[in-house]
Length: 376
Image 1 (cartoon, rainbow, N blue to C red):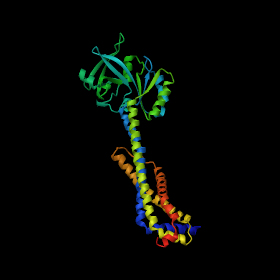
Image 2: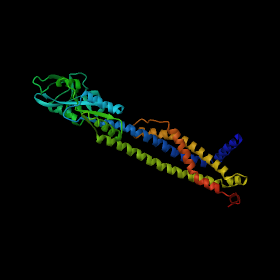
Image 3: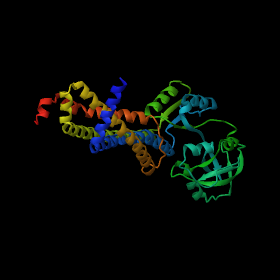
Image 4: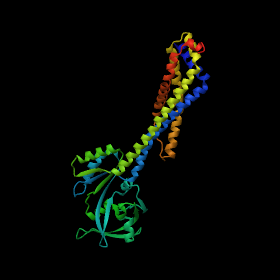
């Protein structure tokens, strides 16, 4: 049995050596297909996920609101956090109030400032983020209207109480967002509590959730079914944009991969057909000496498997390099190489080689030694 195996391997290697140009062409054809599959597969796996994380910079994609006139309590905040769980990349609550400056009403937003920047990374601040309880951010439009400047003291008063709280607060920075925040005064929740008497009634809770549309809709249903005085909504504009970009990119990549794979299959079939034509006399002589169609077929299949392994190994190495180049240069994201791509690509290459050998294999089984040795 060992002698037969050695002879079998020797026949295959000798066949490769004598038809080196054909072997190189076939191997390169398989390598192109393997590189396309592994490279674009890695891009399709890595880039959409990275782009989705990048799109988180557009703001929250999931919000929780009170379902009545009352705000959300700390207990409701904890309940919402428990539902969203580990899917939350970032979370921030907001509390709104109206305060007076020189008898002029100003809308104030209290929040956890570091968390707000995580959910809304598009905020631009001239100056610094408030670091103390007596510092605030002023929206750009408010700063222009009242001529507020960084470092200026601003006196604010709570208007709904006869002995309303009044405090002198320092402008630590000017907030520029291009959105509604430009018309607000922004401060920490602790600073706002000094005016509201320590009440924690959140107007809205924003979440940046790592998940597709189905995940977000499931969270909405779970929170709304609790009947806990709050309701959840998906920010459709952002979530649909994320899902649409990811699906479009993945679909395009897989269409291109399928086309390349079909072209690879055609190339392999044509190359192996040419090999069969060149080896017709050799195969006829083997049959005349007693080899049956099964023996010839097993030799041909062995050559196809070896071609697939060689082409697949070259292709997967090239595919990883291509994927890294595309990810870095085209999408500016770091490639996440998953090594499962290596065995999958090798299996794909062997399958392509075997499928491409089906038509030539049929020709081999039909070769008549009399015809080919007789010069026909």
